Length: 607
Image (tube, rainbow, N blue to C red; front, top):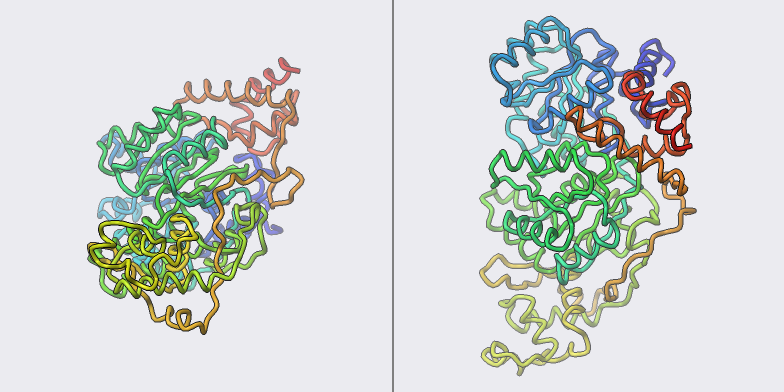
């Protein structure tokens, strides 16, 4: 940044937020919006989206209005801003009438920097008239993908936010999201009347996240093994498809020594809110949830996100896994996936009340998700390619660390397709596999399938191997799952050239699950791991204990005081004075005044 606005923005970044420099496109976005321009910003979770509207709001005259669907999290967002000295507030249904009047007076008089409001609240006549009578610096529309009817998290009220352009044409607007393919980006721009806005698309890569997808066998037992071995003392999120499964999984983890809390829309609001608050404010808690949980979660030290059920789309998967490692430190995205997941998702699409066009879109998104699960190449490459970004092998996903063996799978695929055809495409995967393996079951005898030419031709492979082949057949588009009561396997037109021997098929060779080895710290993966010595680790733990007590006193989550990444840097730098502490990333002037003496005292005490 070379302009006056740029210099002022950098000063705010350093003195208020405590960061020495902008990252990626942040500087360009801040300068553009602070100068009065509209913007559509796509930036990965943890990439620093909030600074892209917070700093322009501080540079411009008036109040910055942040439209956010996250009523349950507004308090924490405001707390975090107040900790760094920013005058912030929110307007939502949790407040008393007197508190609402007080905030409205501050907005009208411009005695506040930022106000958060839900879209439903903003669209009321009272709120619009409040903004009519107030000095507004900008409108920030967070989680802008909610406007897309094709997206994974559609919110009808977002469509009506075009009123901001119509009612306040001279006030800059910035729409932000972490998840949007090309179609969703175009819909955001069109529905929010941001067609002429400048588009900023950052890299979708989160190099600190390790992606791993395993074949689902025992499900919850696999999850327990993963958490116990990889993240026994860390905070994490586990996503399940149903409310019942959420509660059963949380109970299972608690029974086995993992502190877990459930979260789903069927719970009483007070219990749900209390569990969310505990997750945000305490360490070492696993939140087991449906996708009702997570949007806007600012907790930076979530070390793992697990899926016990297949997500519906890559957008949803990317959004959910992106809640891990927001602080830039190593984190895991782990999923257990099986054939039944595919059957269930197909059935949910077919039985939905959506029109045929929407069902086709949902099916295409599910196909892309299956492609990621069954890919023979780097998972990160596949994921980034979906969002239109080219990359090379990452060296930090399971397929890079333990490359799958690619084999000519034409013959076993022909056997599978033939078996599906010979049973008249009327049976589910389990029965087809029994026929291939030559099993002696009552059903096989009943239908005389032991007389078929395909009976027993696959006896050389285990049931798990055949299930892996069925999953790949579905992912490759040779087979589809019917939505009848039996989840029958059906052949597609794409299966014909394979059956006729006109097309070769490459498959992933089945391998029993093996735990991926962690790469050596010398590997260059796009992020830096702050390895601590024993003495530095002791300082870090002491600082964390101090932070927890301080957070309790202030009634805020621990990360609002300082993030782990900042405490790690303090432990390495060992600042013996306020001047030395001032240079640490994440220590702004307000926090230096509030906590500097205590931190320096801890360092000097331990040296």
